[in-house]
Image 1 (tube, rainbow, N blue to C red):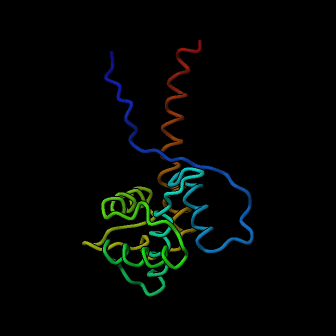
Image 2 (cartoon, rainbow, N blue to C red; image 1 turned 60 degrees about the vertical axis):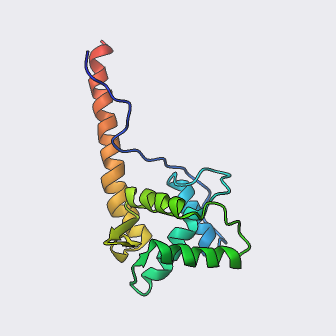
Length: 153
């Protein structure tokens, strides 16, 4: 019997929402996070949205930020908008940064973070998420369907 691990090598959750109209920048980034499975629908702990927003803003100046700088800026943003400070612990911010890195939206340079190569999120989606993650997952799924053909006869 073959050794079979149920731990995925890579995974992605994709959701389809209505067309984006009349949304603020933060609301759009929240939909991006929801559509990529980085947030669960109805999740009140949405610090990952603000992390991405802080990094998007720093991209305009082509500036890399440390985790401490990201936390300081997102705390300020959340206070300004009257948002809960739940999920703003250092450990959670690092965990969310890791999730953003795993899906290629963010990269770590030394001890600092930035949006991947200061690219637009649309470019990252096209060149990294679709071409690398999605294609790899779909190709492996096809391998399993093809392998199963032997049992369908």
